[in-house]
Length: 320
Image (cartoon, rainbow, N blue to C red; front, side, top):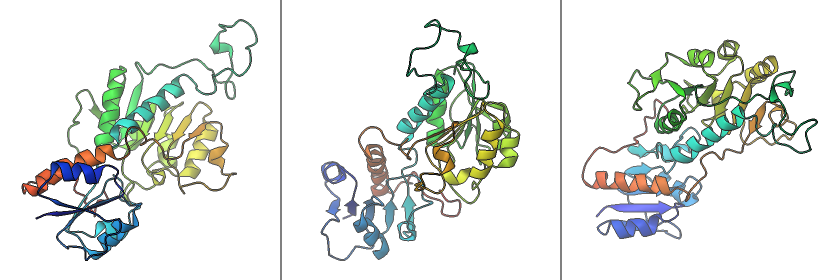
């Protein structure tokens, strides 16, 4: 009988017991027996019981999250490691759309906190924003989006953006044709930065992507570029980011991640720059916590029991 060890994933124990009657499902909370080395582990990295089970050794560690760059080495030591790739695509994609819409409408700068001087419906082109730039709204329709990384999250962002009549370009590690009809491949990140209105970083944090957004990329950026980072703070050279924002008062950075994270210095420049809009690594939030990851695990467990290839297998050399 296959054994599945569970910790820190809401609803998993009940769902697995109901749908897999021939599987032994064990709640690791309070479990002090030896860990079967042929077991399957499905545990949050926030659950210490999960880490102890991983250290003891299991056959398959099914991580209920996507990024592995900050995972404890023990969580990556099983013969098979999978992650919940794309499980949080929906809330993250909606965050990106919200950030792009806010940028186009100059929110929150455009919000009223006092009566405007002059007529209520004044000419926004005459209202200065920063260094003489305008509050003139910019539509998503007809704008160009660039995606650096085109996995499950990038693909969901692309579908929503195409529905807004945006042109969508994507740069990815492989030359594989885009899975979303209407998306065009771009050769590299620099090309995206120079030609798009909104640039979204959704590539994994690896050695290959560290400081991918640097001075060279930003020096060639299209004026007024809106940079959105929902991936990892390590993708952006923050000193280069600051120099770029100071050079281009029409540019904007919507950052859900930063480096280091979390920021503990209240005087850090990211908190105080007028062109930076920072959120606390919360783009993934929305809907029941880990519900999509649980859904993916159940589908993968069926494959595992049937001897079929698993989805979301982690390539430790590639880093995701």
